[in-house]
View 1 (tube, rainbow, N blue to C red):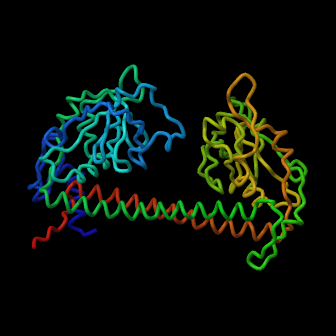
View 2 (cartoon, rainbow, N blue to C red; view 1 turned 60 degrees about the horizontal axis):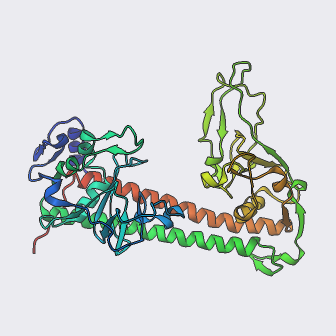
Length: 440
């Protein structure tokens, strides 16, 4: 970043107008002097096209996937049976979901890209571009970057009867003002941001392929199918794998809830692990800390680094069945988790991967008097585990760990590319950095 751009950013942050810039009436935006403002209804018009053709492609707005089929996103359809009142969208049409969510405090605008047509809830505000709008792609990024949020915030309130749904009048939505750069600049900015989108999409596709490769590896290496093969110089001979109950191979224990009193002192705070945090192979020391002044630790067990932890409660509702982690720091665990320590004959890493492979197919029970899906201690303890020879366990864990590392590095790279796009939007959509327009 050049010194000139840094200085310009500092000026704008201090609400000073740099040379060659001006302050717009809309939300006090500071933009280049040759940019203007325009009403939403000049660029977009409302769509109220009803579903008279009985379209069954029910769509929902996802932060990551845009307008996507509900069945694909939720694994179920949450639409009403009578869909004649739903709005029918064609490819290229826009929809605004007034529900606020993480990353979208004032709702989300998305364009229909994945399908030729689809239907959305009448709670959505739907619209299409007008003839005056020569670069609707620019405004797709504008909405995605949250640059309309100041305007929306000015007239939006949370509905008293609809927690999480912003109370926004359609008339107000189409009356808000938007920043309008010259058309060539809109087109160049849109082209740059779409190029970054392609980089992100490519890496996300590669990530899915890596995850599929890992699934294949787990199936090949962990299923007790009696096959034999060489793996990195080690013979994997599954026909010689013996099976034994898990309760004979390690110590199992479930977590508990700390007592809320002041009857015991504890030297320093301690991490508190819940089932929802079992998202990665290793759980790092970034967990919630329980204050020593707030609780008694007399009923808690502190688990050491290397302990394997799985989720046992609320598996269906939380979407965490089959999740599993290895502690990389000393911590306590909640009653929704089960810990495995003091392994015999098998390593903690081998068990970790075996459970990841089998966790989704292990039977469940319902908690008494509820519809909550749980895993019981007896059920887990009586699981029959294959026991490869130690060199086999080590090489299997090493290969799968390498696959994990590839996935982890790719996930970090994707996050970096997303942060790069956010930075680009912040610089380009505000005009802090001007793009060069070449004329032939």
